[in-house]
Image (spheres, one colour):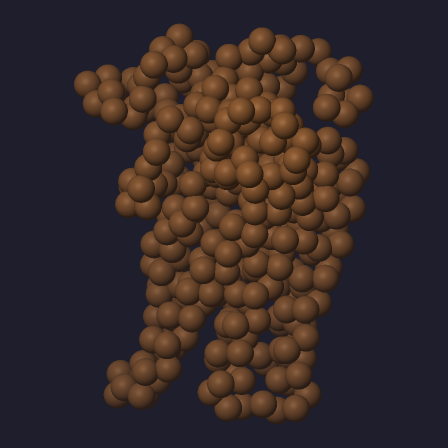
Length: 337
């Protein structure tokens, strides 16, 4: 840990979980390692964790849930008869970072992604009237996306606050500029074909969403992230695991925002050819906004479920110093959200 973290009082800013050298395994890590879920199981799990009420849970309720999980170390989601255990897992997994046991700020919890990005995604895909009208939606979208990626990325490596701030600021500026550039070409070159007006912006937005993850979490492949055995014992720091974590998350983000932007455009394309649209032109924006929210509401849990939260990697694929430090054939790392 960094010197600043070493100077903090024990457990400062942390919820009940892991503190000290001989600490018990962080409950969230224990859950994702022991619950070997299929894609469908992860999807159903995320539909619960994305409950909007998880954004307003009090610290007291979360702490009580964590204490319950710590005193019932054998508890799993299979304990259907105990509703308290189920609710405790839901609160813990949706509000606490698995790397440092710290509370995730409400606006950046997984359940906040849909309400914060759906409106700006919709506004970013509106037809260009002037470049000025596009700056705020694009800047808002990439500012939130960058902050979300940094907060929910892997936090097991040494990272100072000013590094995150400088990195985030650079990623926001570059992402916004690259997002506005094709729109500028549309305005200057009067590109009005269906392909350039509707579908090229979707492709660019999807690619930039993936690049945003790669850039905002670029320190992970550079410095390496913790890899652990099935008991939660840290074996070392791996740059290869960091690269895999960022790559998988970037892929899931391309799927999320690419699909969420593409399907409303397809619906709008055919809707414009109906008699109802000719009589009620204003209804197009209502349709696109509703479609964006609905599609994204489905795609958020889908994208979060494509890869496990705690990833698995063969020890033979990691650095030699890690291979020599353990006899385990499979190790684990936090992929992030």
